Length: 95
Image (cartoon, rainbow, N blue to C red):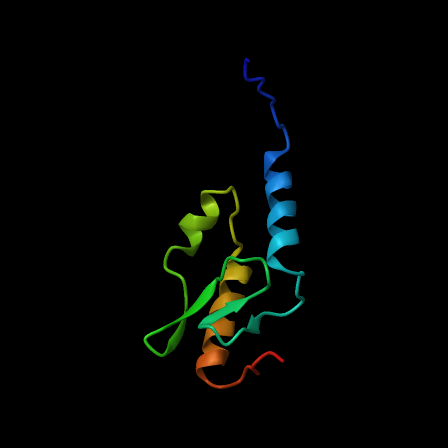
């Protein structure tokens, strides 16, 4: 029996759909899930609790670049502001 291979031209889209369907619904706002992560519900956490401080991951840019995603300056600033707000006690714990 031979193996028949197939080419998937839209692998990125297929992977994104699979991740979104398996990891949870899209959230309009970041949520603290009480597990030392803040997430939008897609499985990759941009902000984590490290040493009792919320921080944007050091590897965020390279992690996202490896899958072809580049954040804008505004998006990076927004993530830094979320971490700051969490450290300052300004974000509510998710229900």
